[in-house]
Length: 413
Image (cartoon, rainbow, N blue to C red; front, top):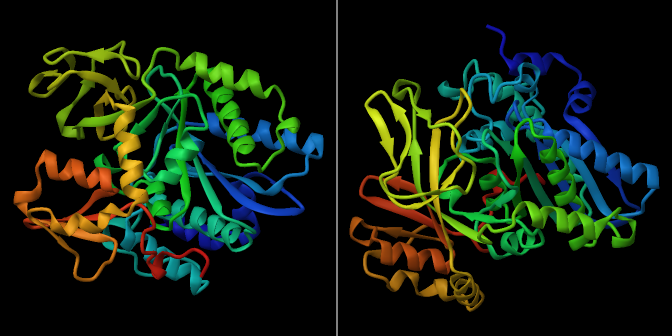
């Protein structure tokens, strides 16, 4: 069997780089590396088009910037067929053991993984992930400042633009440079998202959802968001950004009437055997009341288990998230959590009932079953912890702020 990894090993590295690279614009002055990744899902090409427009504009202006702006394609194999993925979702495969195995093969300059873990054997996405990591690693090693990762996506439902992020203060600050909703809690509902990996490295990283897959407005939303972020971080001088106030107003208008911050409260996971079908007509952030019909599956009608706003309703053939429910988060809680984190109040986490400091990690605590209640988990969230790994009756949660970087995951090596 010839896998994508085998094909990647047969191609020259220069060819891999050319296929992966959307474009790059590099400044004479040192500054941040803006690493923009689009189309981790092959049916989401809007980000690629936006990055082409932005980088071409910078080139035409011969714009001097601080740092580097680089655009990379994600899942090339899935892009070719216009599907979310081929064998496995490329935005669900960034678990530690898998990334470590790929990085070890890159550090050894080997052609591919000689003995990948069994779930990875024969996966087209294994080769895609290896090529993408190689391209990211090359850019990171030549970076002349901090790394900022922007992950561009679109959704299968009609949608206003919004951002997703791992809930660190630096990610919040970056996302709040855009006048669109911020969605918190997604990293606790899904496993193996790409941005979870970069959060572990302590980088600033956010995801931007531009709108529906095929909507022309999704391209302009991505383009507007990128220009605003370049301006906010000082990478591109504001005077060199075309129509900057109009871009802000255009994004703000698309998000008009929506809450500034929402928190995910429920995920409806699905599998092929469930034969889940979302009820037609839902848009992201539409309101739903408890007991409303949201879809059907093999067992019958699927009802909303609680009131909230519908988020990421599934209107495509592939995906294991049927829908989420989110609720508005009072901004006061964000201010409280910001104060607690800056005061390093996380040091008292081990005093909570059923919570003890992890024996081997300074950035983690371990919870017994008795501590898994809304009060304790809510307080840990305020302190900057999020759920990560379960082992029997114990649950390990890691601190989001200033994580201990695992040397095996370090891309600079």
